Image (tube, rainbow, N blue to C red; front, side, top):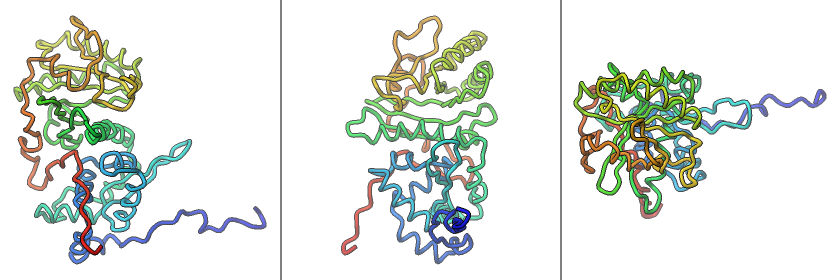
Length: 346
């Protein structure tokens, strides 16, 4: 090794050639790029704008038939600067590639919605800065929860479908003066609809700190007149038991506990052999007076709380609620559009 040192160029991985940031945002380049993008590419750009970061596996599950197909298309989108990517360091093994929106992708979205790219709430430094964010694991975990529901929706003969998914940032814009949920979702199954706020717990807070959020949700229900259940996802059943005890203590102090329906689940709770399907029978409603005899499916939770306002299966939160500002993009549909048919002769 001393006589034959490794060349410096061999210590770097091959990086595909890409345009500069300035060249990738010119009008001519965006016009030429728009001709090459499929509906699924544009949808992915909106998903990255809304949810900030998605891993290769998440993108493959929600938009492509295989991981190989996803990698091939993502490489092309990376060369075109529609997306950017980074790979976090972990102590053992290798982390998956993480994708964020790049400058050309933001310009495409802005022009599609008739906005000036400078007015769009996007900065490349902030987007790629997710690589060093202390909230990266929490954001990826929250997105993993919803992408698992999308993957379930895409399966043949799926019992239900995820029809709305709001990011933490969008929830902050709408409800941030009262509560700060990690996400909002809506699930449709057999002529019924169920919506919820998600609290994604990584066991980094004391159980009483998690339970202290319930009075804020009660205040939100009182202010809006809409009672929305709160689902809390935890890493282990042991953590779940401790948090449920703290939640029950706080609920007893509320004037009207019915304003905050709560259900919990954990990642190591195996529901009928499925450890990654949030729609499976893994949810345990919190009612100390009438404990549930078994864990329930996501769609069954609406029957536990009959006082909830019935939701129309055809309604969607993205269409019934105004966007946060004139430069705020509407949330994309959770389900990706179908493959674009090939043009004759191509």
